[in-house]
Length: 214
Image 1 (cartoon, rainbow, N blue to C red):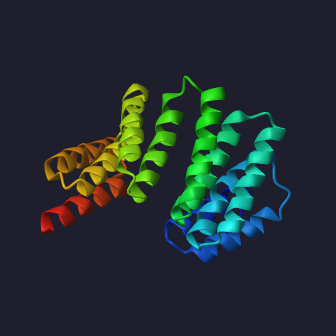
Image 2: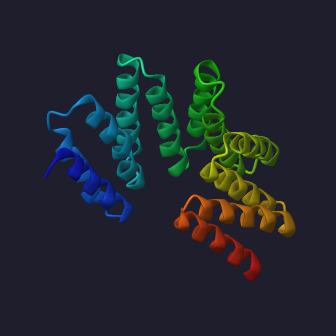
């Protein structure tokens, strides 16, 4: 089996929620003599099962290694992605203060190196907004989620449009504003479908069903 086949299998294990199998296979692959591109590909995905298993320190170490690769290769996109993924690890494991620190670090990095990349800014502002929403800081949540939506429109990216609309839908649920929540969530579904992300669309449909049940 080639390295690429093994990497694909490890990611398949993760998608099937076989997190231990995914983690173990990534670690086996890591022992090989990998090319730079293979190492980057592995490091980017290896953090997923680590985070899902609650192995926060190991996941952060993995993305720190990816960030170092980016610095050594003078690749600012890899650095930005590594910071973003570390923030995702903290958010998945509810380390909210660490989440905000990481995503503000990414925000500053994007403003310095990718200020014209609306997609990068949209993804960063979505994560900040959603984190504030989880903390029930509604003013900051709305500010960043709304910014994310505007940047997603400029980027014309269906996935980010779907995510920001979902975030705003969940914001309006917490504001007990059913009509606005449904409007944003239905637009989210349309954008997930446009991006052929039917899992994302299904998850939003489930949120609407919960609203209707209540």
